[in-house]
Length: 438
Image: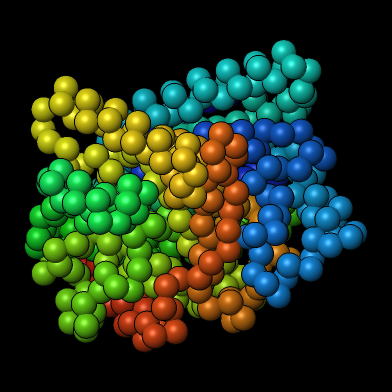
């Protein structure tokens, strides 16, 4: 097992039996949970079903539910298994801070080493050559910047210089401009709507209004949660298409949505302020816009000769960095409040909330399912205009995945098209700038 960030000076060599996954925001929260689960899932032995690739009845659109009847169940298990020889794996942690990236890489490798040791003690085989072939690496990226050394375009170029293809692109990183949690509002929402509703539909977070990107050109929340995922998906499309067809998984883009992402978060004419500079709740609106834009990309990329499905996945509520962003500046107080927050989420989990998986690794389940499930168990992008997978938490048991669709897609398809066009124009403008500055 290795972990590096060494630049490549020559074109990357083809590696037809290597799965390569990129995870943005990989140093904490759901991003770190995705990383842990990727290693756990992909290190099962050949012939053993990959847990997150096994189709779940509740996660299938109704026209496909009959696929798991009778002999279909055995075929599904076979489709979810890794072949021989066992594929090797490269995990790329995309982080803004090198210090955090190194810490995350070390944590991922340390946990995986313990997991493999536990398996061996139980007599569960580890695939031959798995540890020798595993690479956990990192690349720095600032999702708030399009240009510059750590910007989105530079990041995509470095990935192209270093890796021959990309199999799975997890667009997980997000940003919220929370500045305060108003406890009085929280208590009122609990009394009015109940604890579980208050914990998964919060209306007590105060956000900075009009916050801009570091270069002053964009709304910062919109830029990170909508524009950045779009640009990365578009820039890395050639590498996704280059993913070898002999690998057990098709190339996929997975966008981490939010339980708050719904059409009610938008104003009457969303394209008038598409960068959300006047919004009191820009995070909620941005995650819904992210759903719309990635669904529009799914329609564009999912129907080409080598389809790249772009799937939206919602991981439920976990006490992540975003969740506690408004808890204050004093670190000891933040830690105390975080612990109270976590206990509240755990209590909601214990009393049966389907929205609170508690652990980031559990919340990561729909994202891995979206990446690994075989095309057989997905309707084509033309037939399913807006798929969205949700985690379903269960008390003291592993969560499951449920099929859903992006809220009010039919009414907002034109908004999605307009947003995608604006994102594309910004992407092209930045390419033009870079060419002019050479």
